[in-house]
Image (tube, rainbow, N blue to C red):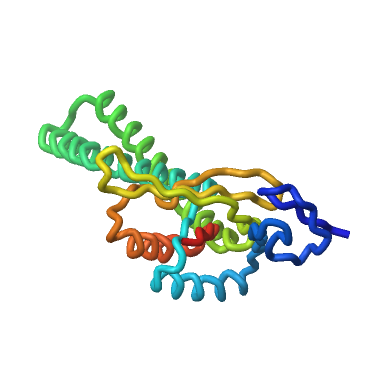
Amino acid sequence: MTTRTCPRCSTVTSNADAVVCASCGQAFAAAIPLSREEKSRLYGEITRLAREGAWHAHVPTNRFLERQHRALRTAIALVAATLILLVPVSVVLNRAAQVRFEHGGGNNELLGSLLLFAAAVCVLLGVGAFYLAYRIVRSFRAYRRAPLERCAALVVTKRRMTLDKAGRKVVAFVTLEFASGEQREYRADHTTYELADARRAGLAYLRANHLLDLKLVPA
């Protein structure tokens, strides 16, 4: 039989479905395993609650998707750099061919070196284009898999809010307990925000990252 232990008074409750501790009234946090359908349904409910100011929503960065984005940016930079190199090489080759045509001769070694360099740039461009296409496909598949692979059960155990040194901005933190028992503290947003804009910023952040893990912070 599964039991629950109160984090405040350490009272053991035999009812696994208990919501609050019978001794001190401490609320038990409930684990929320999210499937694709449940996430879709909860997202609409969270959006409504966030709009009403009843919840703050926190979406931690998915490291797997971060790696995909970094690789995608690298591939784009590789293709861009190759294209930039291709322009001056084309100009030089065109000029060398023009001089050779006008004078009926020329430096064959220089022309051969330029042709070899141009071939290398073209090969690099092809490799970069292939790598870019590969990473685009990987990123697309990662986005599709993320809602299923990265939805771990979680528990909201603690929430605290502090002011910055100037006393003008609010920084919110939340402690989360995962299904494995590991606890981590997250900021409620990646940036501090004005108190008046907290609700709007949290909702916008949730909308922009709704494919990633949802970490809910009761207000």
